[in-house]
Structure formats: C-alpha cells, structure tokens
Image 1 (cartoon, rainbow, N blue to C red):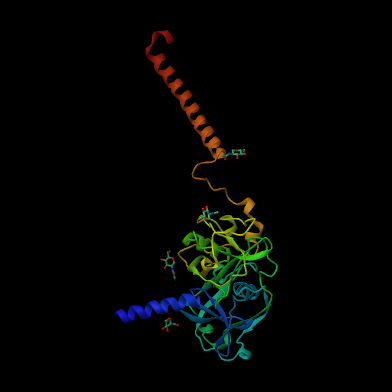
Image 2: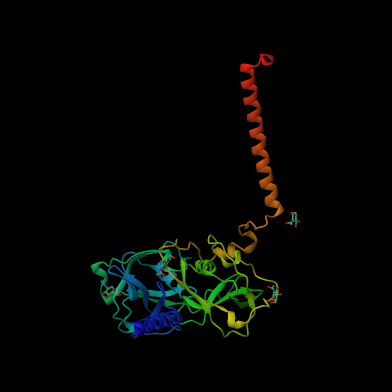
Length: 321
Ligand SMILES: *[C@@H]1O[C@H](CO)[C@@H](O)[C@H](O)[C@H]1NC(C)=O
Ligand SMILES: *[C@@H]1O[C@H](CO)[C@@H](O)[C@H](O)[C@H]1NC(C)=O
Ligand SMILES: *[C@@H]1O[C@H](CO)[C@@H](O)[C@H](O)[C@H]1NC(C)=O
Ligand SMILES: *[C@@H]1O[C@H](CO)[C@@H](O)[C@H](O)[C@H]1NC(C)=O
C-alpha cells in the first residue's frame, strides 16, 4: 500500500515535471514528440466519454474543423499562426492514437487555446479512422517575437502549457518571484494565456541572466491579465533570487469559465486601465464617495421622518389644523 502511494506520488511528480495536464497539445511525428516540432499530427491530452483519466488522443478533421481551429492550435503551441493543415498526415508517419475530440469549432483566429472553441468528446463513427487525424504546420515565428509590455510566456518546459513564467517589461524578458504567488495568481496568469485554470505552480530555477520583474503578485480572481495584478516595475525586484522563479502549468478545467482572452486582450488592456482595487485602508477618493452616499441616504430619511411626523401631528394636534 505504502509502495503504491509512493508510486503514485512519483507518478504525480513526474507528470508535474513533464507538464502534461488536461488540454495540453503536442505535435507528433513517427510516433515521437519533440517540443521543437513546428509541424506534425496533433495530439491533445484529454479525457473521453467513458473515463475522466486524461490520455493522448487525436483531433478529428470533420465538417466543423477548419482554418480557425488550426490557427488556434498553433497559438496554443506558442506559434504565430498556421501555414498549412489537413487530415491524415501520412508524411508524419503512423499515429495510432484514438480520436479523443471532434466537432472542434472555433469562432476567432485570435483565440489562444482550443478550450476557447467548442468541441465534443462523443466521437462520431466517421471520425475514428487515423486518416481523419488533424495535422498542422505552424509558422516558426513565436507569438511573443514582437512583445508588448506585460506579455507573458512559459519557457523551458516539455510542453507549451508548462514552464518558467516570464514577463516582458522595460524591453526585456524577466522572471516572477514566488514570494506571494498563490492559486488565484496562477489561475489569472493561465487565463492570460487562454486557459481556464492552472495545473501546478512551483519553482524552476536556472535563469540567472534575466531580471526578476515581479515579486508581490496579488491578483483578484476576476482579473484576466497578470498586468492587472502587478504592473511592470521601473527596476528589477531585489528581494528574491532566481531559485524562487515561478514555474507554472496551465490546463483546461470546466469547473471554471474558459478564458475569453485573445492575442490582444492584455495588450489593449494595459495596467493603467485596470479595475481599481479598493485598498483595505480606503483611499480618500472612495471615502468621499461612500461619505456622499451616506449623506444622501440620511438626508432623504430625515425628510421622510419629518413629513411623517408632520402628518401624524396634524391628525392629533390642534395647533396643526
Ligand atoms: C477512454 O479512456 C480509457 C482510459 O483513459 C480507455 O481505457 C478507453 O478505452 C477509452 N475509451 C474510448 C471509447 O476511447
Ligand atoms: C526587502 O527585504 C528587506 C529585509 O528582509 C526588508 O526590510 C525590505 O522591506 C524588503 N523590501 C521590499 C521592497 O519588500
Ligand atoms: C478543476 O477545478 C476543481 C475546483 O477547483 C478541482 O476540484 C478539480 O480537481 C480541477 N480539475 C482538474 C482536472 O484538475
Ligand atoms: C487623496 O487624493 C489626492 C487627490 O486625488 C491625492 O493627491 C492624495 O495622494 C490622496 N491621499 C491619499 C492618502 O490617498
């Protein structure tokens, strides 16, 4: 029993290190996978109708699948867009994995993950053949090649859904310190990348050449962009070492709303227009607002009380008649 739990612990750790979580996608050639592939047969790590256990499976190229879906797949892999896509993909060898998604239907070329599209795990009988598997060939340019301030990316992981969290500030990519980084922060960060949830957050050391840009990340669950939680600093964060760099894994989780973020959401929504967070002390601005609301309410109440008194008095007191 003990041995079994150790085994499962190791398995869990292995999965965390590997970074394969629900919704992770990868490109496969001749049955093998490499994070450097820009083209191949698409596999997604997902569950099926009969089991909630995730496993690698293919996506069906059916009536619903098209350019938008292929474009979104490339975005989720961190590439700029799709150059070619199709079904079968014999040039990439045999891929005998079962079909796990079909009816993939995307509304926008600007979406970031397949979770933002609709799809079904009830596989149509016309979708079970390997000749229906979706393959894509993505442009090798990365979606972060022309970065904006506050853009984020996951680096150094086996899959695109996992890696060291990096943020672009002051014209340079830097890391995020874990000193106050928690579950809500992890989820908001994954939402910026188009996922609904995080799968793991931990340390991933080994980026000594970069500045540490963020260190007191404190998000509200309603935020969609990391820059709404903590804006780019003017200088690098001094109180952390690179051994505290945040590594993050993201996943699909239907318990949470899927992210509506597109390629541009966090670019258009810069820190300056972020929702104001009421501070615990209450700034003088909110104080004035609350004060005037109370003044108005008490004023109206006072007038009502006066009118009531006057009416009552008039019914009983002679001086009023
Ligand atoms: C669903 O997944 C389970 C395990 O992940 C597998 O044993 C089963 O064959 C799958 N069912 C179908 C219909 O693909
Ligand atoms: C950095 O750490 C020192 C000592 O632990 C502390 O006094 C200081 O307030 C910290 N600075 C910031 C910006 O957190
Ligand atoms: C999805 O989120 C719920 C609620 O936080 C959690 O209980 C569940 O484990 C998550 N699902 C996965 C696959 O991690
Ligand atoms: C109060 O508001 C003024 C004007 O908006 C601002 O300059 C000042 O810093 C504020 N004071 C506090 C304590 O928030």
